[in-house]
Image (cartoon, rainbow, N blue to C red; front, side, top):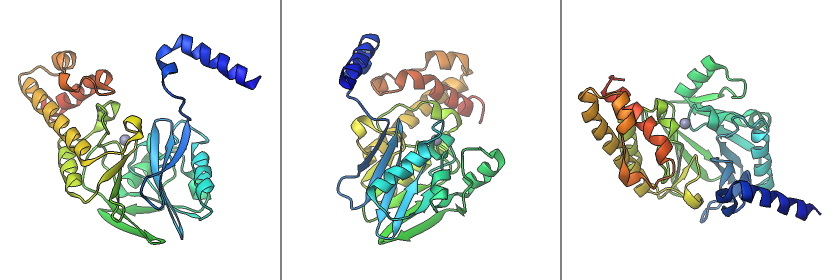
Length: 293
Ligand SMILES: [Zn+2]
């Protein structure tokens, strides 16, 4: 009987949204071990995800990803508990944006120490978001966490998508966790609203110079694949091309209206997010080259 109801519901969805029905069912929440690692996991909630590492002496978690999801933080803690009975020692914020870091209370209650870049802490103390825990510890340019045989390096490489992004690197596993600044095979979108475009190019060059092979992104890549250095290079190239194109128009006095209306990057037209993201990219580079901001 239950099955019948589910089928009826699926059929109704299929009739209303034929495209949605073709996609395989995807649970809202999912935890997957990263292939070839001993204890590196990805926790995904909807279209957001975070890395956590299980060691023999405890767990290092990142980003609660629970903005607008009142139970998301606790659900993440519960997912960790399904994998290990070790205590959660750390919760590390990737950057200040609430869609990634809201929901940390469950981690704090479980005894985790909340760590973020100092710019994130400063901002959070001003904003006092009711859903976002103020960090216990602030990091400057560098901090290394060692726990149960795992080493996790936190590096601040300058302004980029935010002013508070920590690049998290597992040197032994050659994995980095970098959120939002380097989307995997997706066109930049709303996140461009407050990006630091020129500084981001330098940031990506620094990331490319680091020793890593796989990148866990803050939003799942196509088919949940992890990012590579080629993905990082592709984002850098895309930004350089967008910047150069709009620079010319901006200096010819065409910002904002003409550029926002006419800007195209046809070679990227098949990337997810292209149609929606174009206007945002045009606007941000107009702000840079046509306004000086
Ligand atoms: Zn962000």
